[in-house]
Length: 274
Ligand code: ADP
Ligand code: MG
Image 1 (cartoon, protein in one colour):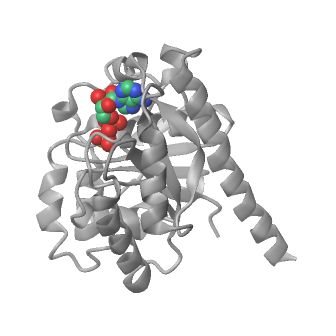
Image 2 (cartoon, helix red, strand yellow; image 1 turned 30 degrees about the horizontal axis):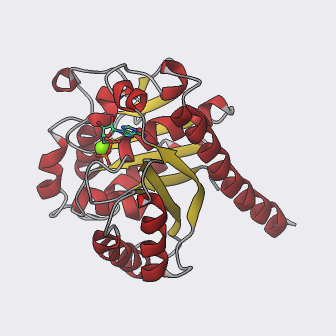
């Protein structure tokens, strides 16, 4: 059995920090000695661009290629085309070709589990696979949820965050019921927190009012900072770009929380094995 944990970073709302979280959680885990594969599951290719591959159109092999190879049973080497970032993470990149998969997957034989099938061919090499989802709940995102052991939901500190959250939680419940019975929501991560306002507090209160203790909030909150926004165009993580920033420290703390969950799982397994 593979000990790899697959995490989908998901929220159908755009601009909530999914891609930023994927980069800095991924690199954070790599800095702790974990082998990490990041999957860009957004046709915008923001994760790919953020990690320094600006010209996504010129990429020969992307996630769309891999999914197509699974559908057509034409996979030769599942590792070919995976990019290596200097900060120690691997990446399956994406570009606009991924948008065609929304349609191509519909008629595929195992349409919800095509990505899961691909990951099963590479995951034994990694400790963590982290999937950066696009801002929609279409076929590709459904594939990301079907492939995931757990979901991390970044939530922007703002009024009425619970609105779209209900739809997301319902979608995850359906995936759990029909496709992936073991999927868990690891937690919600509050992002873009402006300490000058009370929005973080009211957001947490609104989420608690709507979901009770059903979904855990990570202890760490990610502050809003200009340096974090700048990092997107630098091809590196916040740790490399601005190691002493508040956002760098917050993502390092968040990484520890994610690692603690992983260790719990490992303890459970070693207990079961005895
Ligand atoms: P999503 O993937 O959910 O669309 P992104 O991670 O791309 O969200 O973030 C949206 C925008 O906000 C990007 O321009 C990003 O650089 C910026 N951003 C993300 N996190 C922070 C932060 N902590 N402080 C300031 N800007 C941020
Ligand atoms: Mg994104």
